[in-house]
Structures are given as structure tokens and as C-alpha cells.
Length: 229
Image 1 (cartoon, rainbow, N blue to C red):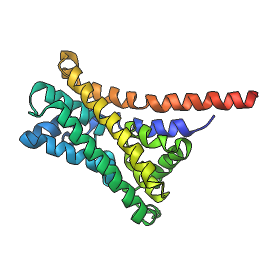
Image 2 (cartoon, one colour; image 1 turned 135 degrees about the vertical axis):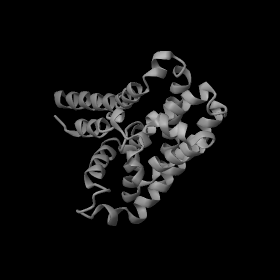
Image 3 (cartoon, rainbow, N blue to C red; image 1 turned 90 degrees about the horizontal axis):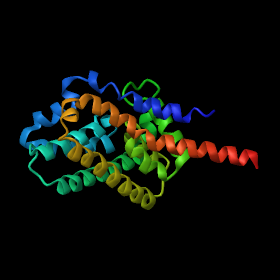
């Protein structure tokens, strides 16, 4: 049995401790603390998580959900369509930035064995994912914490075709931003969800692994079919 799926699931599972995160990383606290600058702050955070390697610890999925909730509640006074558009642009520009970081300085940065921040294991997990799914990985990785940050750099290091990378980044950015933000926008007014944001944050991380699980099972079936033929 391949270890690829457990490696990716483990990377995502590292973020399920959201309930234990310090207050400054709690998505709800972040948006509340930013006040009238909440949307600007969220845009910068999404950009950092998608493009700057130091942003891998940021709560992207849950932050998008909470942002949608705050828009629905009127705490962020911006139309939801504009919020989604701005965040999608930030996610895409972040990916482009991460690609060029990987292309220019990635090899030197990740080849340091004593690096405590840019762990080689994160890159190795992401590289396995990229090798397995190729261009589709750019879309799928949007929904996997940690992997979505490092896969852009890996694509740059591997010098993936720019046109292909940018195209799949745009598709993945739209799918990720719109789905997560609208989920918060439409479900945020449900009392139980509003009162249990930490549980929802964990659930979102679990849901984010589902596309990977589907691809993994499809790959297993294809292998079994080839072995039987």
C-alpha cells in the first residue's frame, strides 16, 4: 500500500488542532481584531499563505469560512461577490509569487539540513503529491493546508511550464476561495455553526482532504485494474 495518502492526510491533520492555536491565529479573533481593515488583512493573509513560504501555518480554510460569515452578518461591509473576487486575485498572485520564489531561491533554501522553518519534509510531501497528480495537483492542493503553500515553490523548483501552472492556479484559486467563503456566508447564520466555529474549522480541514481521498481511491482502482489485465 502506498504511503502517499497518509503523508498528505498527516500534513492536513496537523492543522486540526485549530482549537489549540494561540488567540492571534484564531480566524474569528483575526477578523475581529482587524476591524474596518478586516478585508485588507484577510487578503494579505491569503496572499501570504498561497505564496510566501512562511505563511504555511496561517489558517486559510477556516479564515475564508469566517470571512464569509462576517460578510453575511454585516460585520464586513462589502458585497460577497467582491470579497470572493479580491480574495481570488490575492490567492492567484500569491501562487505566482511562490512559483518565482521556488524558481529563483528554492533549491538553496530547502537544501539546508539545519533549517528549522523550511523543513525538507514539507517539500518532500508536496513533491510526492505533485509527481502523482501533475498539473491537477495545483488545483487539488488548494484544499490541503501546508501543501497549498509549498506546492507553488515546488512547481517553481521543478520549472513547471508557466502557462500551465498559471492556468491551473487560477482554476484552483476560484474553486477554493468561492467554495470556502460562500460556505461561511450561507451557513454562518445557522446558530449552532456560529456558536461552534472551532469545531467547524476542524471539519473544514477534514473536508479539504476529501478530493485527495477520491483521487487516491481512483488511483488504487486503476492500479488494481492494470494488475488484473
